[in-house]
Image 1 (tube, rainbow, N blue to C red):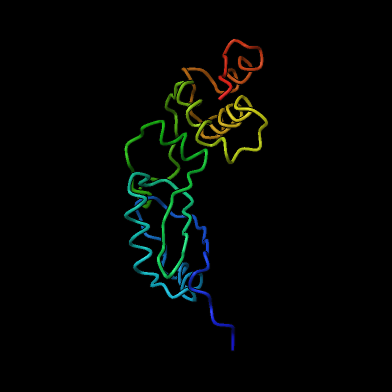
Image 2 (cartoon, helix red, strand yellow; image 1 turned 120 degrees about the vertical axis):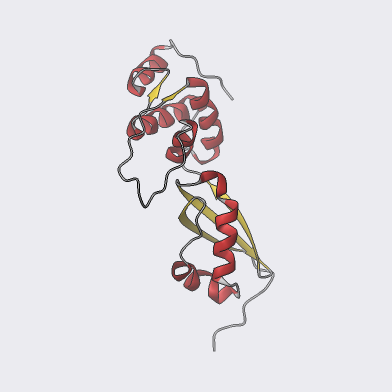
Length: 165
């Protein structure tokens, strides 16, 4: 028989879900079933907690202790950039291959970089800003009305200043 599981132990389960929708219970069951949690209830909680990320793929971290799950949203750089575009919510089943051709201000890029700073591998905030500008380039949006790579060159040349913190 397997060893009895410790109820005070903290377990972390990380999954990718579409915001505003519950995770597929079939995908959740093998991960949280052995921990004594109902997948359907956890799926409903995930849908409730990710409501303001509706339609975007985001990472959700479940912290489970004493058969209680705490749900926290861990947004990726691309989902933060797409959210900063303030696009209308879309039904992912009907609208496919969407073009994110909006405009994001450089100040918003800096605030996104400050949010992503703990998870970035860059040495300084300037490096994280460059990472976010690269993400904006791959998403397909513009920064201050210009192509993100132009802004990257301006950050390197010093035209755009990036704060230390």
